[in-house]
Length: 138
Figure 1 (cartoon, rainbow, N blue to C red):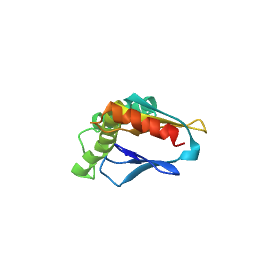
Figure 2: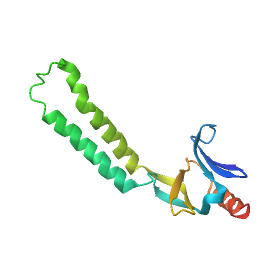
Figure 3: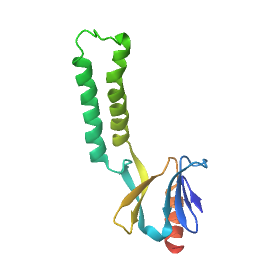
Figure 4: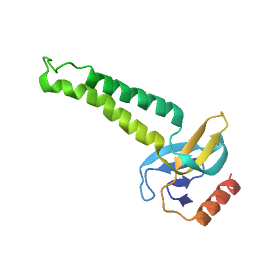
């Protein structure tokens, strides 16, 4: 059975890149799953860590921009690309750490938890039926 980006198979739970995609993002063996619940919040698996790392990357990029006196480098204009790398990575990671929405929280028997993203739009009733099917087919 498939709902949105999540498909239940005999041996695993699969997250796809998009509701109509065949590109697998995550595969979780059903034998390892302890509990599944629908939640709303940050998509990031570890949002606080991602927020700290992205902030550090942004600070590094700003430091490199402000710390480059007069751009008198043997590389010339190419030296400008150096601070852009941490700035772009930091900006991307910051945006990703702040994204919010609906997801399935899958708790594993080893104590870890994964977030499987649900892409809007979807019907709440379909989600309830999907969770019931998942619980009853275990």
